Length: 133
Length: 137
Length: 303
Image 1 (tube, one colour):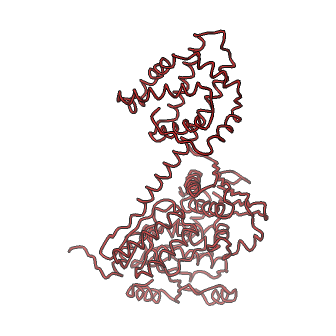
Image 2: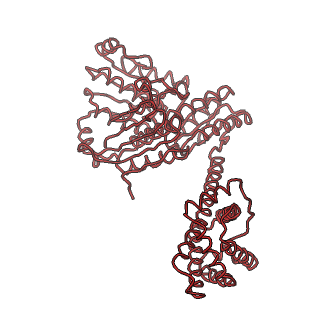
Image 3: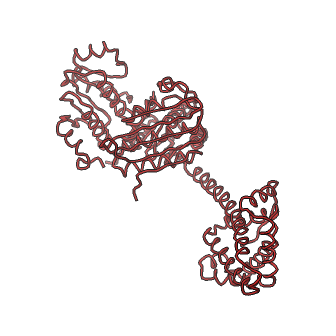
């Protein structure tokens, strides 16, 4: 049965894998094309890995929803980790404090039709991203 | 899933986007006839990449001689599309950039280094053939 | 309920205290269990026999208990189990014995619902036997106490069952990973590794290690990483694949990446991944053609 919303706790590597597979399936069932479903899955992968790396635990929710008269698949990634002090810098192409190329967040922003990030030191991070159908 | 039936918006795009694509001597020639819109570009990109896979395209010529204007954003979009074609293993040559377009892009300080371009088709074919002999991309 | 070694862990005593508090079990409850125990004295064999009547039609019975010797051994252990239960003592040994019980059931793969069904069967039998024996001295408080201790007992078993199941799944994952990096020499001088599914950090390492040791072993000059079966290429995976291609070059082996689908091509470019000088192709066939070119093989159909 097609599910409209899935929430996955991110605690270990295997949860990231599960989030990817579930996100791709939900996107396809919602009617996104294969390339765009892959983009959702890739964004989920990117955001879930960030949670593991920086916050250790958090959750990723993927849902198909109508908003402002338009059907969309959206991702909500939240954690209560250390947060990001300077979002603008973190979004820059090559910034990373995690040891890999810091393409992740800016790449996700470019892939998505909508992207929003809220974070403050000690407050955790909340990313909301969406692709329209 | 990307049938026109399930995407009415896209179906109309398909009608207006007169993007001609044909395979000649193993080379996919894509001619942009009209000025670009976001919708046309998205559709073109998906169609083009699907074609590259289906026909196992190894060489592609993007003919932009029909374009009077090409702003930095559209150019960036086209460049990304060419990168996608490239990582699917095909070599790309851009043909027919007009002087006005080129000088505008230079003025806008767009990075043009990774683009291979020629003035006309013959030269593009010669370039691709040379690459084929060398076994490079 | 099969045989198993009981090893008391150092935190079992603390666990016993914690669980007693969690299930609100006081001395009165344990006293009631003990009085049930004396009422059931000599009737446990009958209760266990009824349990087997319940169990006999189930497929699990044939699966685990068809051997009469095993059945007899398990039966005796079970009697001992209930005698122990009805002693009304919850201490480190009690916790340890229940843990080992959970471990055994998980190891043999007995479904939890069968286990719970079995426990339920005993609860019913005990209630009946108790009410038959001396109806005046047993009331609902005895049933409540019995449920509390049974729940505690079951919780330990399930907890251990879960822990073991997780270990088993992790082991299966390891086994799968072993199989998931099958580097083969598809042609003289040419290696191929198809990557399927999701690549996590452990698998990344595995891919690197397997690839490099196979190159050392075969002295191949071209390696093909086929990613057509990979779910997503995010920046972490891409970085790792690029690292693999750099590493193989240091061993004199060019690494080609094949199976770049339109979807993967789009996400890689949108993410801003620059593959640099890595040679990539849409299909494995194209990569193989390229590999033949590099190694100087010519393949042609017979005329």
